[in-house]
Every structure is written in C-alpha cells, then in structure tokens.
Length: 388
Figure 1 (cartoon, helix red, strand yellow):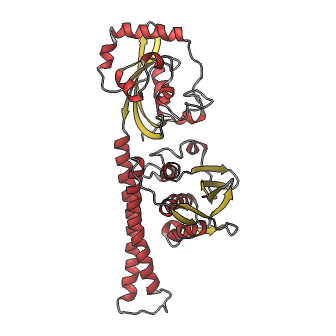
Figure 2 (cartoon, rainbow, N blue to C red):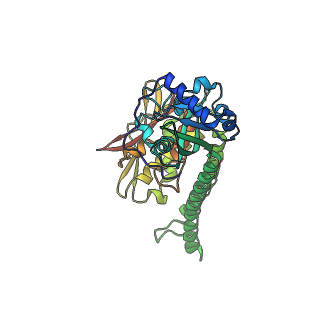
Figure 3 (cartoon, one colour):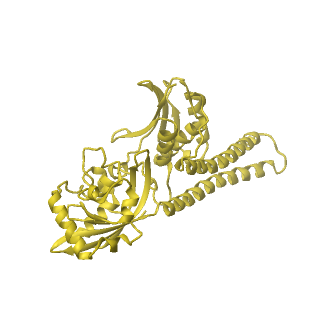
C-alpha cells in the first residue's frame, strides 16, 4: 500500500440538492461536449462536486457497480454506489465515519478538491448484494474548474491482483524462511550431538527430543504452505470444508503446542485459562487451527519479552468463543484497519493474518471475529462459532 495519510477528522456530511447536481451534470456534459467521450475510457471514471457527490460517471464505472442507471448514481457518493460496508446500512454518510479517516479514496478526493492532483490506494470492503468482498483500488484524482465551481475527476484502477501477488510473495518467503531457519538450527544441534553417536542426554540435550522437534518443524513448513493455498481457495470461494467433532481444549492444546519452543515465543509465556471448559461441537479442526494459530501468532509478535499471552474458551449465548489476550495495546489508527486485506499491524513486509482469520471464520465456519482493546490490560481477539 502507498502511504495514505490518516485524516485528522472525517469529511463533512453536507450534500447539495438534486437540482444543483442536475445543473452541475449539464455543466460537465457541456464542458466535454458529449458523454460519449468519457465513455470511451476503459477505466471507471467519476466527476464529483465539492460535496463529494457524483455528477457524472462513465460506462466503465456503471459496469463496475452493476444494476444502476446514471440517474440513480447521480447525487450519490462513491461509497454509496460501490457498496462500501462503511457507508451502506450505516448511520454515517460515505466519508463521515471515523473509519473513513483511513480511506485512500477520500484522501484523494479531498486533496483534488483542494486543487492538488494525487494518487492514493484504497482498501475497500464492499457488499455486492450476495457477499462481502475486499478490493484494493488505485485512485487517481485531478482537480477541474467549470464555471467557477470545483470538481474532482476520479479514475479507479483495480490493483487487487497486483497487491495480492505482492502480499503472498512477502508472506510466503517470510514464513518459509523463518521455519527453514528453525529447521536449520535444530539440524545443527542434531549434527553436533550425534556426530560421534553420543546418544545420552548428560549434557542437557536429549537427541530424541531434538529429532521430534525436527519432525514438528517439518510438518509446520508444509502446513504454512498449505495455509497460503487455502487462503487463495477461500478468496475464490473454492475452499472445501470438512466438518468433524471438535474438542475446544484439544484444539487450544494443539495450537499452543505449535508455538512452544519457537523463536517467536522465546522469553514469553503462553497460558491456557484453567477455567476453560472442554466444549464439544462440530466444525473444521484444520480451519480452526488456522484461525486460532494466527490469533496466537499475532499476540506473540505483539508481546515483549517477559509478557504472558493467555488463551481460552467459553460458552457464550449458545456459541463457543475462543479468545487470545496479550498485554500490548493497538493504537486507534491501527484498530480502524485491522481486518483490511494487505494491512498489517507489523509493517509493510507482513500481511494477511487478521484478514484471513475473519475471512475463513465468517465465510466458511459461520462465526464471527472481533477484538477489544483496553489501555490498562491490553488486546483480546475473539472468535465465536455455532455450538452444534
């Protein structure tokens, strides 16, 4: 993602009436002589007035949103028509909620209306009438003055494929190299202590345990590759879910065991809440391990040496809830973007953990993922699933 600035406050909610929008539409048409000229552009294009309402859009934009004619689009704001989940069905207007402060499209529009040509990238969660999807959009904005009125000419480019490829490359090599590094380290230990077939553990190193650890890490290497494959399938609605009886404590024990002894957990403590009940329900143990593993991994990465990460489960309102708590506090700006694809709490070189846990939970496991932050106690991520 480009470095989109976080706005100090959302944009004003004021709109102009339909008569004003119609007059501005005619002014834009007169300026360009004919809408045929702008319809020739293959990229979606919008002309917005100073209150960020659409006064003109080309054919490519109509094809992008579907089911609208130009009259229905005119006077609306981009988020209204694109189906942005922050605008549609919410109490705030497009551009006016706190979440909109991090919107690259809004930043581009406001800068253009202020007379500055610019380019920003926008992470858009939209509902297409059937399901929610995430898009990365490149937004190019240029100022336009017609009859002493300011307009912004906006062109949209779908860069999801490019950003997806970049994210996968970064994540794949980061995770694979980390795992391979652990494998190499344990291999060195094994070679050193078995060179002369000294199979005792008198020096504090148990060769059998080293070999077992090597096997665990090798399995983890394969699992991380498969996790990336599953995420691609999930985004393409092709992931097959194999449901089976699941034990909540067994799942937690397996997930915690995956990280004990890893470098990421070095000098950090992982504790399973002793009051967590063992809940039996039906789900996909593989996908649950993916989700809870990402939660625990994020919590460990956010924790400092000496801190404790706590995990647990409980029955709440007829559902089973898993939770992972760490002592760090997520900043308000980061909280607004946690579940966006290509956004990471760990910087540009990281990526899809929170996005993937939400995607898999909500689209395939019928649950929900949320988080809460307390300045005194830290951050807790929660995943809830039907208890059936």
